[in-house]
Length: 227
Length: 227
Image 1 (tube, rainbow over the protein chains, first blue to last red):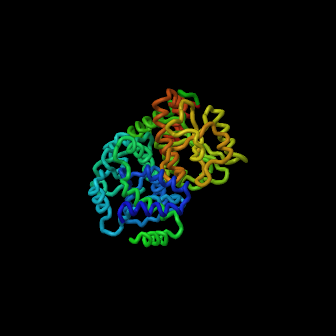
Image 2 (cartoon, rainbow over the protein chains, first blue to last red):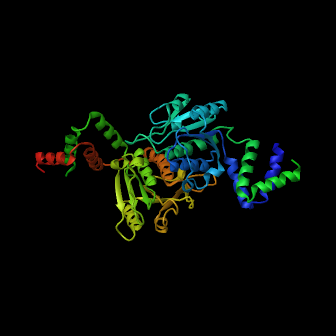
Image 3 (cartoon, chains in turn brown, blue):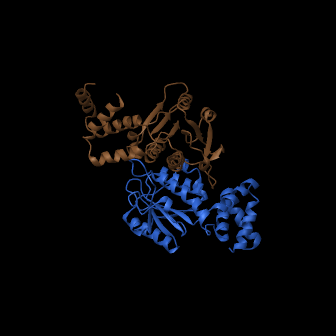
């Protein structure tokens, strides 16, 4: 579909949600960004992964990449509170080395890869530059990121700590990073917003999640317009 | 024991830990504060409560108050990673209304009670004043804080959000608040440090956790000094 056709479809589907709902969607979409994205590598505990998704949704981070080398991860509905249906999730679980595949693809798309790791002190969270598109990598609960992920990273970031404990819970780590970095991205970079094309695609998905019989409606619309 | 006797006990017990360990303890203790403390009301899921303890430890928050009206909470060792033994935990689970008891006691000690709640928009996290001693209240996963807790609060705080999801996971919420507020307390209030007496008490506890046969050693020391 061309952009103008997508926009027609949006106008059509919008008739099937309440004006209040539509206003909320438009407002949330306006704040969505792909300038910052999140990568989770082999998160074992579903409540952790689900809490990360929930935080991404809360902070307007659209893209979450899920690497599953050793673990198949299920969204925990209690913790995610439906957050995942407002996000774009990308799964890497089919090759021999999903980590390399995921990170290579992100690099090709122009992302700077930043590994969160309490043992690497390249820079503190507050000093991390976000002028370039940035993918934040989070590793497993016990062992952290894999050697491959650490080796492929362009930078390392850590959260300042004042106690004996040397690392945060994974979902806590992600939330703090996003709490700090997402307003920084919006306030200091000019190019953080989604393009018209991206906004249209996401809006169609959100509307399809929000109406009953989305397939039938979309089909009906396409027939009406003859495409 | 008088302060000077406590200090003698500290010097004695210090002989039984490595210099490196002792240095670490001293450094961590220097950053500890009671100016900010955390109250958890009826947290049902132990991994959440344990993650809050771990964040408190990481950010140097010494006191955690645990209200258990409807739930008995066990520290989850995997998530807390031993954090609880470096903290002062206060439990309220014996009266008819532990919430009122806990908050009243904190008010008597001069704490301003601040409830975290996404539905009350008294002020954003970034606008919360911390000149007064502040107790941050966190409520249960599903229903949030009780009516009693909300009614007794002196203020309400919320974290700015840009998505559809209207609340954070409890451990995420606590971590973000502490990440933002604990350096603010250290940088903007003059009176955030522990007193000599408080430092001595905590150091004795920490040393006793770190030596083998702490009871025997302490007894031996007291006999030597004749008290």
